[in-house]
Image (tube, rainbow over all chains, first blue to last red; front, side, top):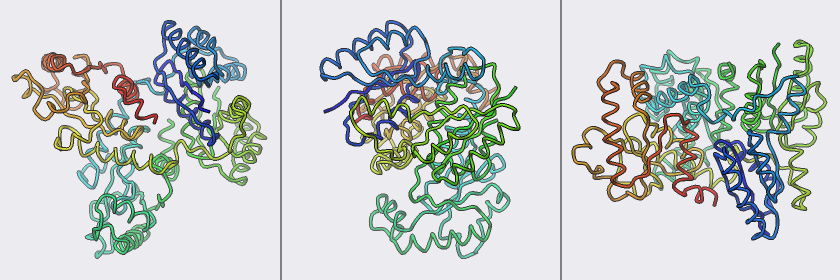
Length: 273
Length: 273
């Protein structure tokens, strides 16, 4: 039996979806039909979504579940009147924070995915531009402006991790690939030498790397397990000798790699300020 | 008086931070010192964070606030023993969902920012690669594989929006700039003509565009308000004639633009499935 789940928000609904999905993954045996309704910021939109929830309850033969991050009290009051289990991610917590802090909350719309502080937003967009123009070893002359430079062999996750760091945290992240040409010298490629303190190495298990490379270039020497093993061994030796920190990304998502780098490098402190 | 806030998670802490920050923005007059502690997945790490919270309470002269997305019951029990206001984003809701669904939850670690479903993760990474190699009008021969093609004049937000759609939703998003060369013909550039149904136009107010362009190329003709006005007018006319939907991104963040596109195009249905 399928349950319908609504994610309802004044703004993008991203936070409601994230937390709601985390909760739903705790019920792997249940089936959920999901519907996100963002930008519910007027009473008319609130009434429309109530009508939709009630109609869904009728069709499903059971009440839907509503995950809400609605800030506006009037809009929320309307939506809570729907025939649903209403789980609110904000109102209860705001009440408890008001008591704890001895302050009244502003009831302002969530800023977490809006432009919010324009300066901070501009910094994120600048970082995305920087990362795009310093991907894959290009424009090394501008590494002075980099906050972190990821390195490692091809397909260890450098590019998506840099983009994530830039987009979400406004970090100027460059990346530089280690290729077989770099190994005979037994030292880091020249463009990296002046920036050793900013370097962060990514590695991965050979079997996983071979699988990823085979998807891109099936049957190639580049993708062969032997070649992957050799490249990884040489790259790890190089990075260890240069005292570059190394992270194994084999079972990590881009988000997990990014968070690990922020904490390992101390960049997390810069992001907070 | 500053309050210390901890975001504590078994995994990345991204969800705890997002929701916690949204809550904190409701108290613009309070000052918060923020500390994120990800990957708290053992009892030892739990005890270490308790010691840190208690020491912070002593130093601050008031108890910290802890936002938690801890799934593991034993770890959470340890952390709740700290001298803090403990706000849990999961446990209470899981209890209410268990009652509603008549099911026991799996108490599995949150999958929302892990690799989770490997296939879905791979799709996101493939989309990032596709978007990177179809940025700014290159590789138009592969537009058959695009799910959406953003167009508009330079600096309307096409590239970061494509990257966000790819990274977060696994959407194959390409983008193609409209430049002054395209306007005399009064029709869409040739590479776009076979893909009109996938096109989505971005526009922006001329004043804002001039400001963004001035930051990149100060004092240039490209950035002048007159030129921005002319380009925008010509591009909007072109897109309207071709019946391309147009979104004004002037006061929107990348997240808001992306969500609006997902809903306006119906791609949101594909993302859910």
